[in-house]
Image 1: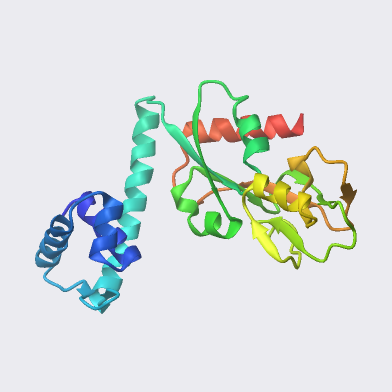
Image 2: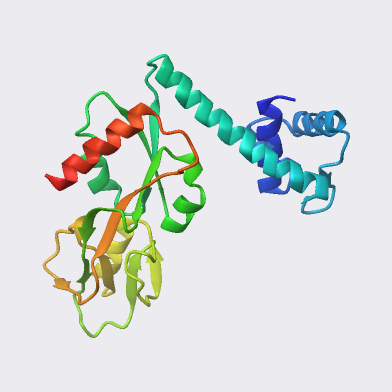
Amino acid sequence: MDFKQLTYFLTLNECKSFTVAAKQLNITQPNLTLTIKKLEKDLQVRLFERTKPLKLTDAGKLFLKYTKNALKNKESFDKEISDLLKKPSVLTIGVPYLLHPCLSKALYTIDSFSFALVEDTTENLLKNISSFDFCFVPTSNVLFKTNIVMYSKDFDSLKTVSAADKSFGNLKTDIYMNNIFSIMQLIEDNYTAYLPDIISLNYECRYSVDLPEISVGIEYDKEQYMSSQAQVAIHALVTYFQS
């Protein structure tokens, strides 16, 4: 058994299809099928019911739990080895939709670090938090605060649009979007938009909204090893936003 087999198993479980999983893994379907069959033979159990969509057997469900832990431990091991060897690595950082521009500006003030920024909703970022070195999310661990502002060319507009992330102002809106240019076009089409103040659109039709401030902070998987690079980066970010 090796980590490649474990990765294939996890991907197949997520995709529920040999065809889809093979495409995502960029391998052939026969290759994936043989790998899973070998894994089942080594374990002497059947991991999947060959239904459409695929379903885990009871043994598969048990193996899933231990597989996730094994890969998580490997990620922590790789980070600790990088620290031990002083080997620079790329920090993977999760950011909510639409906050990418302002947060990337802060990140690029930190010298000698490489970053990979992944945009998603707060819900998905927290759900997959072990995949990141750390994430920016609305949280009580405050790094900075931002208000919700309203952009509208017509107060009589009944159509509204908001940021894709509902945690940035839990507003009842017609559309949630994650593309700022699409939102700007909707404003031109007489939609009313509610957005975090920190985005700072260059529009005259900008109005304050009587809503609580949003507190944005840093969260990470407490059970996972945090590299020295990530620790230094977080310290630098805290200094940046508090200065």
